[in-house]
Amino acid sequence: MMPSDEASSGGTLDALARDVDQLRRELDGAQQQWSPWIGRVAPQRRSSAVNMAHYWAIRQHDLRDLQTRLAEVGLSSLGRSEPHVQRTLDLVAGALCALRGRRQPAFADNAIGVREGYDILQQRTEELLGPRPGRRSVRIMVTLPTEAAKDERLVSEMVAHGMDVARINCAHDGPDDWRAMAANVRSAAREHGRACRVAMDLAGPKLRTGALQPEDAHLMLGAGDLLRLTRDAEPATADSHRIGCSLPQVFDHAEPGHRIYFDDGKLGGVVVSVDSEGLDVRIDHPARDKAKLKPGKGVNVPDTDLHISAITDKDLDDLSTVVDIADVVEVSFVRDPEDVQRLLDELDRRNASELGVVAKIETKPAFEKLPQILMTLMQRSRAGVMIARGDLAVEVGYERMAELQEEMLWLCESAHLPVLWATQVLETLAKKGQPTRAEVSDAAMGVRAECVMLNKGPYITDAVSTLDSILCRMEKHRYKKNPLLRTLTSWRPDAAEFIGT
Image (cartoon, rainbow, N blue to C red):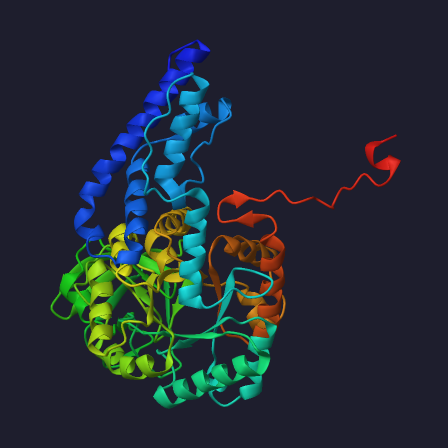
C-alpha cells in the first residue's frame, strides 16, 4: 500500500478507506484464481479454502504502512486476521465509514466471523488429534521408542504425564512391534481415562550415506576437500574420501553448482562435477576444522529436483498395517501436492478415507508449494501439517528457517489446519535430563501450534511433564498470534515500598 499524503484527519480516513477497499476488491479475484483448487476440497472445508485464498491475496502486498496508519486511528491493524480475512476487512471498512459519517458498505453474508474462525480451527484440531486435554488446548505428541512395544508401564507413564498423541515411526521396528505399541497406547488411555491418538509416520525416501569399511569407520572432511559420492553400494575405505548414497536419483538429476548437505547440515558443499558413476562435492562447511561423516547419515539436496514420490514401495506395504491400527498417518518428505494426493488415493483404495492425514513439511519444494499442498489436504475433513524443522532448516538455511516457520503457522491458520510443531523440542531434557535455556523458550513458542512433538529419550516422561507445565502457563498469555492480557501477579503493589513511597 502506498502511504497517504493527505494531511487532514478526513483525508487520512479517506485514504485508509481507499486502501482497505482495494484489498477487499482483490478477494474476489483471488477466489476466482484459486477456484480449481477450491472446487476439489471437501464441502465442509470450502469456506476455509476460500479464506486461505483471501489471506494469500492480501499477503501479496506489503501492508506494514497500512497497519501503522490503521493503528493510529484506533482500528484493527490486520495483524491477526488469518482465520477470518474477509470479515476483518469488512469490519475495518465499516468502522472507517462510521468515522467519516458514511453509509455502511455491503458485507458478505457468508464471510467467516472472528470467533467462528477460531472455533473452526479448534474443531478441526479435535477431529484430527482428539478432544482437548483438560488443562490446555495444545496437544503433546511423543515418538515411541522400540521398548514401548513390550514395556506397558513406560507407555502408561507417558499417557499419565500428558501424552495426547503417540507417534510410531515406521522407519524403525516392524509391523508386529507397531501393533504392540498401538495396543499399549490404547490400554494406557483406558487405564487413565484419557484420549490418546496413534499417529504413524511413513518413512519416505530418506537419502542417506552408504557403508564404510570397517563398519565403525568415518571420513574426516573440511573446507576445500573433494568428496566423491558414488552410485556403487560397495563399502568404501575411510581414507578414500568416497562414500555411497542410498538414492540413485541424486546422480540422475544433480548438476554442478547444486548444494548438498550431510548429517543435518554438519557438513556441506557444492557439486562440481557429475558423471555416470557418481558426483564430486567440494566441501565448504565447516569453514574451520574438520567434521566426521559416518555411514547412514542424512543427505539433503535443496537445489536438486529428484523426481521421486514421497510414497515408497515400503510405505505402500506399511500402509496395510497403518490403516488397521492408526488414527493418523504422516507422510514424510513431501515435495509437492501430488505426493499428498497419492497418499489420499492410496487410502481410498484401502477404504481408509477417514484416517487423519498429516503432511510433513521438511523440504524446500514443499514449502514453496505449501498453498497447493494445503488445498490438497483440505480434500479430507481430518488433516494437518507438521513443521519438521530439522531437514527443512538444512535445506533453506537456519536464518531463513526462523522466518519460514512463522509464515507456515500463519498460512495454516488461514486454512484452519492444525499445525504440529516438531524437531528438537526439549531434546536435551529428553536425552540428558536437563533442558537448555533456549529449549525452554522454544517449547514456549510451541503454544502457537495445535500440537508439539517430543522425540524419544531416557528422560522422556520428564520432558512430557515439563512441556505440559510450559504449555499450561503460556496458554494464559498467548493464543496463536494473540497476546492475552491476564492479570499479572509478578509486580503486585501489595507494599508501599514497591512504588517507592
